[in-house]
Length: 128
Image 1 (cartoon, rainbow, N blue to C red):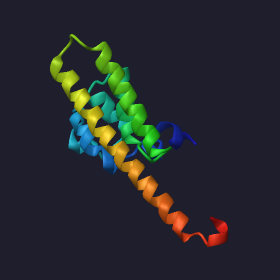
Image 2: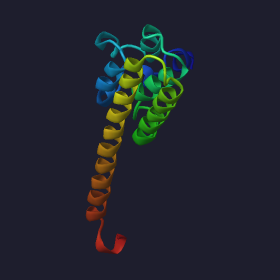
Image 3: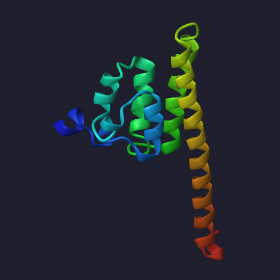
Image 4: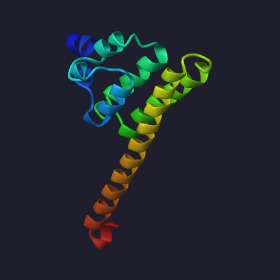
């Protein structure tokens, strides 16, 4: 039980599909196979960015892929809104990450749609 509290498996190694986005948020490549908390502390992320990193890190490992991605976008967009007037480079990077996540959401929705069609096609006529 203590391992699941101190070192949960869904925070061990970043999700493969989101690594390029995490790098956009300044997470070094060498940290992507470690624990999420180490990456958050390394980039000295605040609440919003830290939560976005968390959801990108565990994407699909704990809950629904699309929901994790949408939560990450929500935190990044909220941070960008309250950060207007601060470093434009940081806001630009955050918006770039949010755009990349939105692309992943669309890809995942298409994957889900194709899986549903495949499942439907495998059903016998009386089961449809």
